[in-house]
Length: 105
Image 1 (cartoon, rainbow, N blue to C red):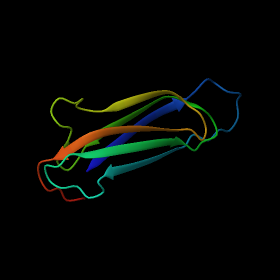
Image 2: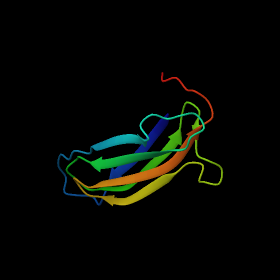
Image 3: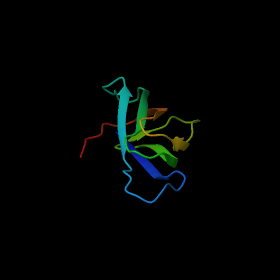
């Protein structure tokens, strides 16, 4: 029901060499089963599994398959992480709801 987008770039220029940029992204809903018209909480967790700090990591939660944020909330919840160190994690949560039954692709 949700789409997650993350954009990254390395932090400060490090010594020339071979670095590994890598993000692990997980998304969960609470409750795990969503009922039409009932609000649910979506949480995305972004973890830097690389070996260098990343700067300006942008995370967005966007409804899919009919899921949308309720009226009065930001249309596209997002978070800009100024610096994400190796091994560090950040979360973004938002409430969504669906007015129709969606079918996963």
